[in-house]
Length: 111
Image: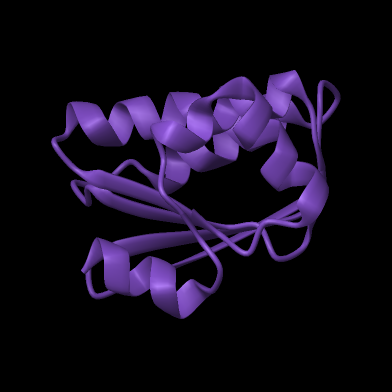
């Protein structure tokens, strides 16, 4: 698993590549927590290279979303493959976190 991030117009854009599962979740949670150390309160997860998401990985995403909401901010997800999208749909979390088809749509939603 790899995590890349950039800050664009006050929006934290986090791209996760590979698998976000029980084995990688602790490291991912630590990385995301460090990325979110500032005062920025808008967060976009780019899942265009995320191959797999387990319940442990879902917990990491929800933890980050909860922190952003605590800051009175906004969160969005984008570029989900069919499997990852199904995880969010079945879990019901797609009703709480907007899912966009492209990075551009996600950035526009958060702007």
